[in-house]
Image 1 (cartoon, rainbow, N blue to C red):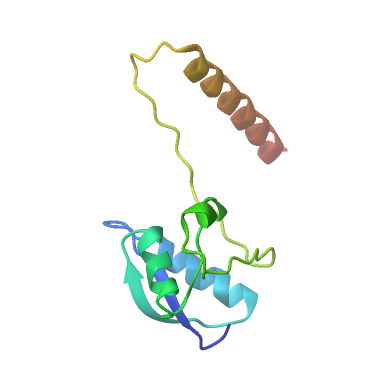
Image 2 (image 1 turned 60 degrees about the vertical axis):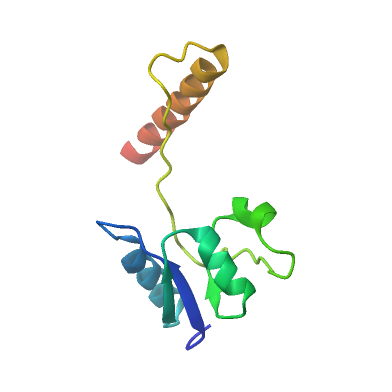
Length: 116
């Protein structure tokens, strides 16, 4: 992976993605040659599909990827991303309430584990 051409996603205005990516690469023992930066992971997949380089993307994009793209899990590549839950304040549907409750329970579990 060292020296291979890479494609990364740049998030504006406060891009922490690139620095996190480079830190994860260094920890994994390689230095990527970042040749392309995109504004979203789907564009990154398009560049990968064109043969322009490698990219790290979330597994959920497998179904949206062109068939010629190969996905590989990288358990040794230590990288996390923040996930945010958003909903309309006025939404009173039971499914939304259940989702909020489930996320709240998981968040509390994580807070307890991290405080120990």
